Image (cartoon, rainbow, N blue to C red; front, top):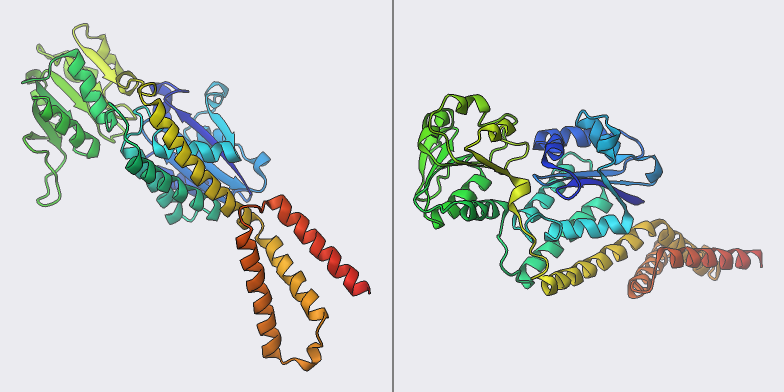
Length: 402
């Protein structure tokens, strides 16, 4: 069994390309079910966030799998230039990459909080759709465990905890947000994080609500609210607009602003696909920003911490390799058990042994082999198991010939 990974992220593709591959949860499920129809595919997990789209596939016929082409087809793109933007990794490189992603080393915001949940949710969706397998299930489980350990043990310096916080801090550097009237569109987790940071910085915040449900709708402390459908009515009265929804359509369009005498001066779009129509930047008095503008590089001041995280990743990589060795060698181990039992049986007169005693002998042999294999787990590799199985079979054949 081998693993192949194809991925796009903020390093390899601009936002106008990435948003084509930003799939909703329901779309992810549809894509996974379609991928699993391929008889070559044993397992598939699709991770889709605002900054990356990654498809992991396990197969014994990896050369027949073209994950980048699969994703382009699902996105309705048949463009060789887009396909060429995908990074392809196999086996060990794919394993390391996922663990780095889960730990936040590949994130736009170094070691952000949300990525662990996103990786965990990707595995959960694949499990629900029955498109995962034991290899990918174990890999994703160990990756999220590594990420939790890194989050607990390693303290990253001077880095925002989320893209939302980074985006608001970016705006603060562009204009002092104290007493600024800000409209936040979107009451999901990201929108609420934006509100929280804006209030800390002293802004006067209004947030849109689709529909208020008592006991279910969370309104960030200190924020005013407005119905989502009424957002255009207050655009003339706010100075900053932040949009963070999962809408497939623009929340703010060029036409909404065209006839306004007073327009907001700043627009921050932290959604993917984008919420704010790019044409808005054509208004000369408006400054528009999106995900690709907001995050700095914090790796240099955290070089030591990154090394610590990589050590954690390496320990979980080794755990996965050990598990995978036994997983791949399961048939070999079974063969070794059978050869050992036949060898033991050949030295006994089974005609004088009851069926129950013979069964007990077989169970004892199997348990003994399991104990020996486990005690040698650090030294065993798939190749060593192959050699051991070959030698056991050879010894048994020689004994039977005698």
